[in-house]
Image 1 (cartoon, rainbow, N blue to C red):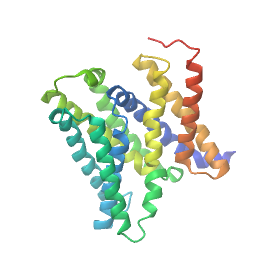
Image 2 (cartoon, one colour):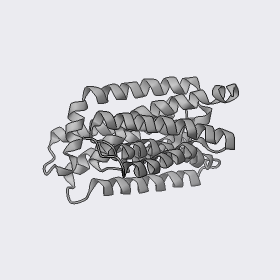
Image 3 (tube, rainbow, N blue to C red):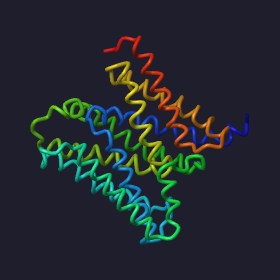
Length: 275
C-alpha cells in the first residue's frame, strides 16, 4: 500500500492541479461553445515541441521546446481572436477544427520525416504523467498559479464575455483583445499540461467535468465545486486502476471521467437543476 502511495502521489497531485485550472477553463469553453479549442491548442503546442526537437535537437522538457510550443500557441491565439471579428460568416468552431486538422497534418509530416520521432505520438496522446517529478509539480504550480491569478483578477470581464459570446452581433476591438488574452492564458496552461498529461487527458479534464456540472447547477461557484470533485475522484480511481492493471494513466483517468459523467447524467434525471 505504501508502495502505491509513494509511486502515485506526485501524479495524483499534478492531476489535482490540472483539475483546478482546466475545470475552470472548461466552464468558459462550454459557455463560448468552442469545445475543441483546447485540443487545437494542444496540437499546435505539440507541433511546436516537435519542431524544436527536429530543428534544434531540443528535448521535450527543455526551455527551447517550451518556448517553441508557446510561441506557436501565441500565434494561433491571436488568429482565433481576430478571426471571430473578421470572418463573421464562418463559425469559430469551424476555424478551430480546421486549425486542428492542419496542425495535426503538420505534426504527422514532421514525425514521418524524422527517424525515431514516432515515440512522440504516444507521448503526445497519452502523456507521461506516471513519471511526474517534483520539478514537474513545481512548474505546474507556478504556471497554473500565474494563469489562475489572471483568470481570477479579470473574472468579471471573462464571465461577461463568455455569457454573451454566442449572442454578440458586433465584435469590437475591446472584445478581440480580451479574447486574445483568454486564448493566451488557455494556451499557457495547455502547453504545460500536454507535456505531462497528453492530449487525451487534457481534453478530458477540460470538457467532461464541466459538462457534468451543467447537469446540476447554473451557479458558477457550484459548477466549479462539482467540476473539481469529479476531477479529483476520477484522478484517484484512474491512477489506482492504471497502477493495478499496468494501464496507461492518461486514458485510465479519462475513462473514469467518462464513467462519472454517465453516472451523473443518470442521477441528474432525478435531481432538479440548481439556479
